[in-house]
Figure 1 (tube, rainbow, N blue to C red):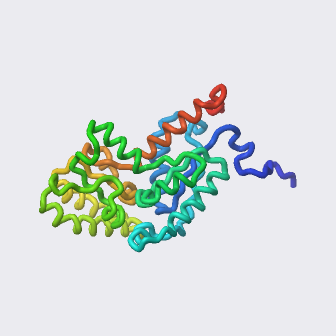
Figure 2 (figure 1 turned 180 degrees about the horizontal axis):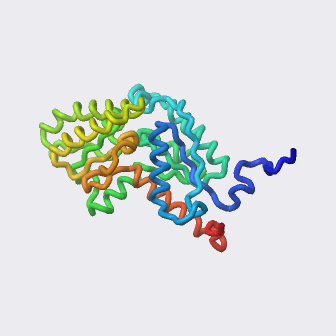
Figure 3 (figure 1 turned 90 degrees about the horizontal axis):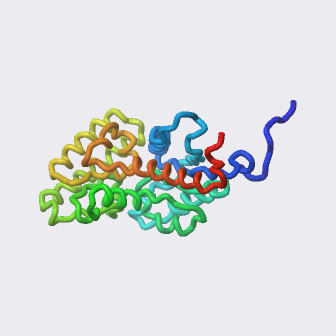
Length: 263
């Protein structure tokens, strides 16, 4: 039998040419990764397969629990995330996206360790909020729902007691506990119950009249449905997809003769 598949030393040699694909560190969790890739495809709004953003998604879900690691001061997830990011670098990726909010607890260390761009989901979400609201995020009445670690060590904003009052802070632990239960349901596949429960938690959060409710866990994004279209809801996964598209467009235009636009 004739071997028709060319063999090269580098995974990207020949196959990708001058195009450098997006690298996605996935598996945190698997449904969240799949959801991000679906959002990326939907937002691309192209007319043919060849115009979609090329990506390499590495979903090896054996990464230690991020929230638990943060609570005990362990950096095990950082080492494991970097192992995967380095693999994507070697595969020829030109930028790295991590569709997991809590993983961005180590964003500074990840950025410093990489030789390619990290599209920092937390950083770009903060910037998107500032741009859309015309105000700094810390000046807004914001509630972030996510893992216990991302709420106890706020990635986006620390709730301001002067802005919400004592009643909110007495309810904050309950909101955190309910969000953690929803995330656990998503990870275990109990999607129907998780979605209904999320609607209840959003309703409870809205009773405090916040300016923004941030879905600061990608599992919550994965089951949010049309919630992301509401004016008071911020979905970092949507923002990450937008910025990945922006990166790819800039990357394509930087090539000689716009080679990335050719079939």
